[in-house]
Amino acid sequence: MKNLIIKDKIYTLDLNTKEKREWSPFHSKVCAGIKKGIIPDIKEDYKILYLGAAEGYTISYISDLISIGEVVGIDISAYSMQKLILLSEKRKNLIPILGDCNLPENYKETIENEKFDLIIQDIAQKNQIEILKKNADLFLKKNGKVLLSLKLSAISQKHKSIINEQLNEFEKNFKIIKKTKLDPFEKKHILIYGENK
Amino acid sequence: MKNMDKIKILNQTKKDVKNILENTDQQIINLSLILTKIPENINEQYNNLRILSDLLFPTLEKELTIKEYCLFIKEYIIDEKINYKKLQENGISKEKINIITKINSYNTNIEYKLETKKIIQKLSKNILKLIEIKEKIEKEIDILFEENYKNTKEIATISIACKMLEISGSFKRLSRFPASTIQLLGSEKSFFKALKTNRKTPKYGILYNHPLIIKQKEKNKGKVARSLAAKISICLKADIDKVEIYKDIIEKLNIKIKQLER
Image (cartoon, rainbow over the protein chains, first blue to last red):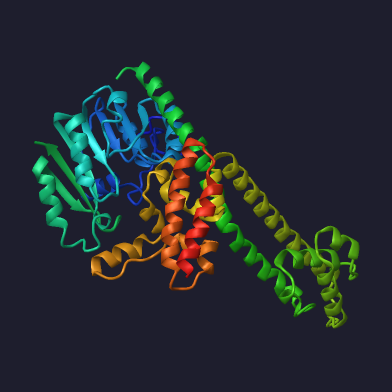
């Protein structure tokens, strides 16, 4: 992938003298999804909301993809937010916010009711789909897309029996475009790409 | 969003992060997390030291604490003479010095090279440094509690109050817990397991290590834990208003415990 900031942390030089970075599918669930066949349609001027940004590995690649647009990263931990703030000072299209994704009303004013084209969620909680629904109601555009990485072992240890249950809950609010298991890269995970109904 | 907005939001998040990480609760939690791991480190290094030093004094470790043992080895090992003045300056009592001289007379007469002697001395110095760090952290936590949460310190003891803070996250959240929740803090796993299987629920969590409960007979432990938890929850609420009430509460608690012991 083309690097937006030259000589940023992880990079390898391409033969055509254009700098490129390596994106590992073992560290990032979005990259693992691309390897398995889910290619989310992201344009240069998109505005993206990332829930569960943590220290900013995946979000830095998404900021490479949208050179004109903006990406907002939200996380609850103050420790990992320190690293995300340092990253956001380098990358001008990245905005960090400290907040709880379960309570989107708290950061509604700081975002100023902005609507987004795509919401990406990577949170290991019991009510993962409920969190996505709350945020999509407030911040997603009419034809906006969502990309959800569902961690099954966070919901229940009997993960085989709950897959259909979770997919039905997802289909109440969103339309499924594509879904895959992330098996060799990430165990007991499902990546779902959907559209707002 | 415009470019101006980003600077505003960035400053806001920086302020939020600073508020959370500078909090006294967070400082206490960080220090107590270090404090729980240092003793493991000391024990590991002490075992390494004794591999070498046990050949000289096979029975000395039964009589002395780790700190006294390291102090003695550090002074003795190179000259092989007991320096009474220095041992007394470092706080070792006369009785223990007598024990050391007795054991020294049965010395095994094994001789090390000078370089291995230096290694032994450095190992013992290392342990003494770790002990010094541990004492400093304990002092620092004590001062933080003394300034902010005095009632809780007097009744719950420092080590238990630190563990309660680690579980709840902040003192404000802890003070809103009811007394029954405080009684069972730390035993969540067995509590929910008991609810699922319709068995008896646990009587105490981390409160089990409190000096008032360890003394009691097995029959009374649950009852004392309940009354202690009630008093702790009162103290937590008083600490937020910054009122000193711990003397009255300790008196009432002692009367209650005497009634239970009959």
